[in-house]
Length: 402
Image 1 (tube, helix red, strand yellow):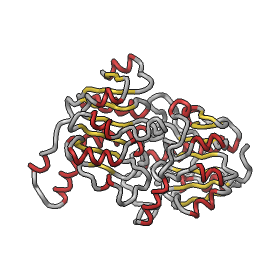
Image 2 (image 1 turned 90 degrees about the horizontal axis):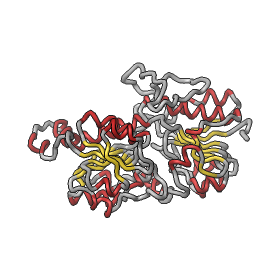
Image 3 (image 1 turned 90 degrees about the vertical axis):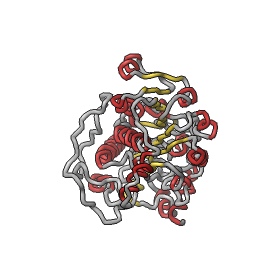
Image 4 (image 1 turned 60 degrees about the horizontal axis):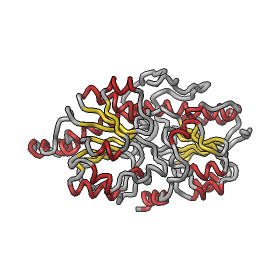
């Protein structure tokens, strides 16, 4: 049951270096009511911020403080997700909230010490930073805000595909440095038109990528445990493959849009990459641990891959000596695809909806539930397998000490 005076611990990324709030580029964001599949956006009783405000950093507090304190709860917000201060606050916390972009890794060891912990909420999509096996064993519910930033991520995928194929990043650097070296810019630049583009997984994000790539006049491919309806395959002109290996050997561009769980951890290894077409491009905005990071770097250095891009790393933040920071032909960013100002409004309001339901003893939307009552449930039962993928997360501490 929900405590009357709960302690809610929230891990968020640090404020902008130039201070908070930032100087916003726009005055508003589009008002979207329904997701493409018909699911409604979050429906909390209210919000205490202006949509388009920065909510995902420490001072933004996900817009939760006035709501929680008015209900008699305590809110603790920190960016020190990997240190002893967070561990100390977690020990008596009832709820912990974290983001995929700046994840507080809720490991078996942390869960064992958090005797009051009842729920771990992901402010976004993807709860692999929580040891789901340990959460279920200790009856800790796990929830996330499904679909809140799926389109945000799909847009980032399309952007990254075009930037890699057209060799945008090196060309931009040449222009910014005062150069006009056209031959160097175009020596690795191609057209996307006519290429074979495939997604590993065609769920909310993968399907959105396929829909957005169709107007580029490419050949679309996909692989998924659940085949899409025949009507969707026909509408988009999709070619289905039973396995990622079957699909990847024919595609010029491969994008990873599957969840991270024990079955997919390090699925992209030397053998996977060797099976791809020489000169293919790989885009990963799903989870960094889907890939063997050293295998990716080797494939770029050897020319097996023409480019790698995305925004997900493991651990996060990535240590300053992470090989993906310096490998050739990459278009990497910090984990930003799902935390645009537009997306922040949706996942912040979704977190509040989850909290309101929890404190009122009302059912949480099935599509937000990953684990409940000691087992995978809701969307989690369809998207995850039992187990733990937080191993190695201690390396995130290196970002602060290197």
